[in-house]
Image 1 (cartoon, rainbow over the protein chains, first blue to last red):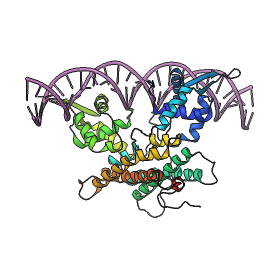
Image 2 (cartoon, protein in one colour):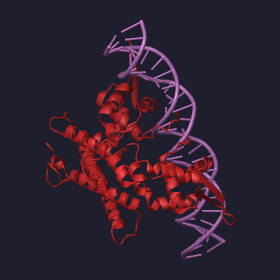
Image 3 (tube, helix red, strand yellow):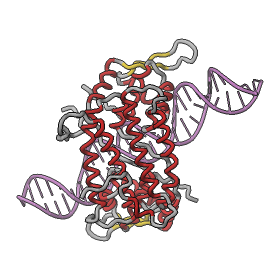
Length: 188
Length: 188
DNA sequence: ACCGTCATGTAATCGGTTACATGATTCT
DNA sequence: AGAATCATGTAACCGATTACATGACGGT
């Protein structure tokens, strides 16, 4: 059995459903935004289509609300829970990549100081957020999320340290104010 | 102008072509394998299709070998060089993500010790390779690749340190010691 | 001459992203 | 009541991965 291919997105959905079943895709979206999105983003549309897929292959059970919005509620089936556990218990993982566009730009000849000045605030902010979450005043967390958070802290520290070393060694802080929308190449 | 959408893959191709034009897609594949693949992999088929795309929008010039294999040779056009420079000179970059499947598995409840044992050798090996490349006996490198390599070293160090801390230790409660593996104490 | 691996591509599929659309709530 | 935002989804497109396929070259 187990002839069904599961993408990483599939496992995310199964894992999120496990934590709050029965859940609508929108519930998953909110839950993802609180947690996994910190190191793995996915657009909300994926959650809808992925829930459909997983229901089709029998890993999720779909049910409609009876009144009001008649939203779709998904819960793990036994097969789904088994698939999730199988994946979770197998320590093998396809090797990761860094895949950071700023490093690519650096690699291909971009200006190190300018890129560093652009990158640093975001990593610094992430680091602070993670440290606040991990602090004693933050919410209590399960082992998995807590350890993943430690990894995030370690990586953000490395980023902050690296980009800091590339900063143009001007006086105090010209680092401030580097916020601008990034995506729009739209013609006006 | 600049109405053409360029994916990251596009920029990789433009950047690689710049370094060894005129180049066949296969040349690009080899060059990528020596360099950029360390933090951004792409299958060789992408190089073929991306060269086609870029030729269609006028950023690459295509020419056929006259004899023998009649392979296709690509070179940057003026427009292509300009597009590459424009991208390179713009320090803004869409924010990156970690997107490491092993962290996801950890997050969703996988066994920390087992995952760590699986992850550690690869990161350790990468770290050694990078350090060898960066050493004095390694090949001389341009600034971009050299700095990207420094980033790779910093990140791999963080990974090695993190996963090491999760390794099933001889002592019982090693999981307690996870916080702050880098050596820096948390601010109050 | 044969076999294996490198070199060089084409084509189909599929997951992910983008664009669009509309019904509920909340705020003023 | 109207505006704004949240909630909930559908559909098209496109880039990326996978599968397949074949020609050249080197070794035995």
